[in-house]
Image 1 (tube, rainbow, N blue to C red):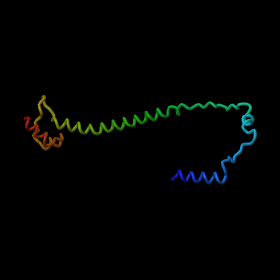
Image 2: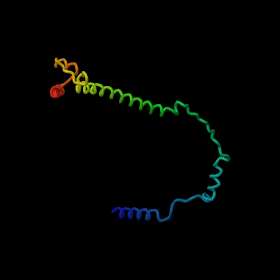
Image 3: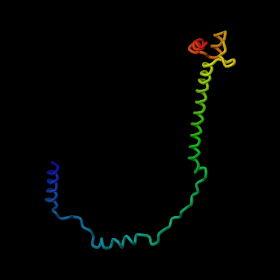
Image 4: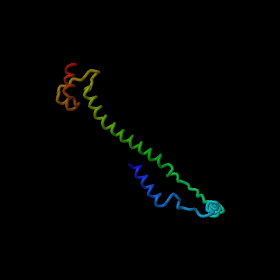
Length: 133
């Protein structure tokens, strides 16, 4: 279908205008082209001034400073989080595992309620201590 439309349009244009190319180049245009281009170019190359730019030291070291501060921030937050979360848990774990000792033996506590409060002992540890005795 498209080919038929193109053929019809081509036939119409050929019948109306013929096969002759309506565009013409002026006489001597191509032969004088090189000469006209060369005359339009400047005679001497203009040299652009190259200005030396010195970058300050703080601008050169800025990426390094940013990376170092990010590392310090991450390390500081990690250290604080580690100390916060492990300190409470480790204290509770140490106290819950063992009551104060006398001569290497687990001390006997007469007041169980006070021991539970003082040493933060839960029921499992209390039963374990009773079973060991």
